[in-house]
Length: 179
Image (tube, rainbow, N blue to C red; front, side):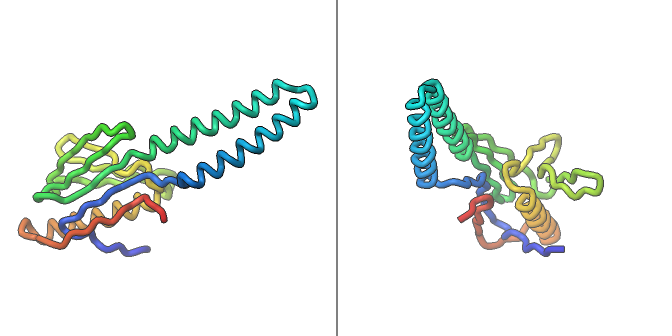
């Protein structure tokens, strides 16, 4: 079993979805795929099968459209911070709309759902208190969601044990981003 360190008492986390392909990689992919589609489409056109050329073009347009859609959704992010004695969770959508929830750290409940017969699959990470609940880091891979849950649970437990005068240093790790 892994051991996790607690987050500092005044922490600020930014959770972002993983983007597996950089902008430069996207341009290379489109150039190679577009060039190959144009060459193969031209070959079929020369054989008299000119409608195939259009389908090769349609493939390139669809690939471009769905990658752009993926990049748009990758602009969303979530924040989790301890400020002024409150646990603040915020979501910013791909369009820039933001929502924020504030939880009292002494009353908040953290639940990491376990799925499957033996609980081996990791589900949603849910913060709840007084009838409010929100799913945290739904776009994170399951192991990162489990690590976040463990560290946050440990931090909340230490805060409860330390009392209201507990103060600490700031930190801001960035979950979900890969170098």
